[in-house]
Length: 318
Image (cartoon, rainbow, N blue to C red; front, side):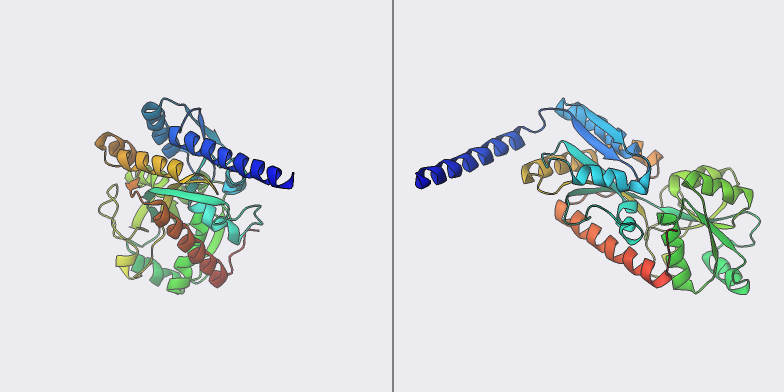
């Protein structure tokens, strides 16, 4: 009797695994929910529409605002690992563990799919500040310790941590004036309530072009196509300084490899199509594309980097 029960259980497990394999091969057979939060959802909407066109299944963008990306991360970490719930991961998700008690683990609870693209942050200043280069800013800040304010989209935000890394690497002392959102931070910079900001490209470029703020460098290792005249922070005297914003795709841990590979292949296919590249270029995205393993290594490296920055700077979210 016991032997028959064991054989039945083994058979049921084999059948279940076969059913799962078949469903994975046919993926997708129903709508996909792409959860966003912790950054703009423009990439999910643009790429999601292309998934819909290619697969004939609707991709629904589920914007989980608030919580700085924690709500979106939790929603996906706890979802069924079948490929029908995805996370638009951003740099915010690898910074949050340093400031908040999360209900999920960024490595253990997710399956990496691909790093889609990066976006430079722009080191920008108020036009009244007599600086045009990174070196000028460092000299002025050292001459006036504690007198310059820098702003960001909030305590524990990427802009906050990037400026703390800048302070640590240069030895300058600037005071943090946080706002609730990046847009509010840019407005504060324009108004002169702060003099310095690391602003994500799409929020900074129009204001730079209008002369409301002055861009002096970008945070990527290569110059930005949207701001080709601006040098990188690294080439401006801080070698190794790299802190781009980024968009990638994570799925719940345990998502079948066949599903992961199908999504990855579709992203890489789009990253070779000029029409798609033109659409994301307008928003400041620089295409990347990666294997799941490469993206997994990238996420781990980002977690280590920002943990060190938070520790070295003593930055807090309160």
